[in-house]
Amino acid sequence: MSTAPARTGRSAAEKHRVLIADDDPVTRRVLSQYLAEAGYETVAAEDGREALQRMDNEISVGLLDLEMPHVSGLNCLRQLRKQHPHISVIMISGKGSLQDAVAAMKEGAFDYITKPFDRDELMARVHQGCRASQLGRDNEALREAVTPAAPSFEFVACSAIAQQLVRHIAKVAPLDSTVMLTGESGTGKTTVARMIHQSGPRADKPFVAVNCASLPRDLVEAELFGHTKGAFTGAVHDRPGRAEIADGGTLFLDEIGDLPLELQPKLLTFLQDRTFQRIGSNKIYTADVRMIAATHQDLAGMCREKRFREDLYFRLNVITIHVPALRDRLDDIPELARQILQRIGRRRGQPALACDAIAAAMLQRHAWHGNVRELENVLERASAFCEGPTIGAGDLAFPAATADPADRPLASRPPALAGFTLDELEKQAIRDTLQATSGNKAAAARELGISEKSIYNKMKRLGLSE
Image (tube, rainbow, N blue to C red; front, top):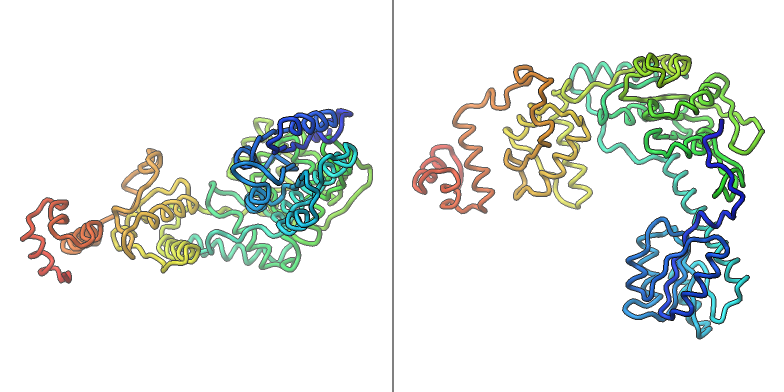
């Protein structure tokens, strides 16, 4: 049974929203009437400032008057091209100046029309603008699917358990068997899937990812297997699915446990013979892909509860690789933190920060229920508020909900301060406090609860330069 939206028989224009920005109320009213009768949803603005405020990514076409109060049509166009590049902007002018038309097209306008405008001509241009906008969005989505973003971190394997994972990856990469990746959210399952693809014989072919949890239920089948023009409202042209795009390469189904139950038989058919049909077509397509799936859920338990098909589970669960939680690979944390801080520094155009000994120990002590994703967030925040080149204990802030989880005994974690002498701890405390007070020793002494004379004595004894 198709999961695509049902046909309604109405115009596909109802899927598109059009912004009308004109300081003339009569023009706004006439345009709104024309567009509403053609099935479009409209949003009106009486000047350029309001147009920018009301613009969002749900709008397909913007009709902008060249001369508007506060923000002119051309300035409005410039900002929209930066913030909403897939929106088709049609400029409207009462002057009919060729110079205005050239200026608008140079700034990226989709089209240009003069008042008084012919209704049929205007509707034709709006329709073309909607198609161009939809095509741009579809192409962007396909580009993201074929060339997904680079991993947010390089895979680190300093710990024994991570090294074992790397060995498993090396063994399965040359094979063509279906792989199931299990593990908590944020452990790096997508990175492992890319490593398998990049280390195998299909490395020069597409790696296409589908996140089953992020797609609306009624769009999953269309995204996975594609659709034909007119298959449902809004299907204005033929569109291949992710399986078809991945032909010859790897199809990665992330969060497979969230795949709608009614779509699972179609995926099972695809896994068995690599054939499928686009929505709205009886033609049989084939795609030669390697399948990798990932989940943080207990699929076997979901099968017992009839929330996941058992036959599909066995088709997917050919080779299982478990990606360990970060708290089970504590030896990887220092190198992971170093790489993350280097990446943050490159992105900001700044030298990479480093963690001092106590901060590093705190990172290794934390439970990390959010895994590497949580580590990235903690370091992102710490690097934003850190005053100097070194992240100290005071710069780290952990989510309260996971700071001391009840399901992990404290004794099982390495003590954060174990192995440090009292002099080392005192030295670090004074260094961090001086850094926080911009070197003001009187202020640092007050923060530490000691006299100003004492801080000078301690600095001398501990070898801290003034």
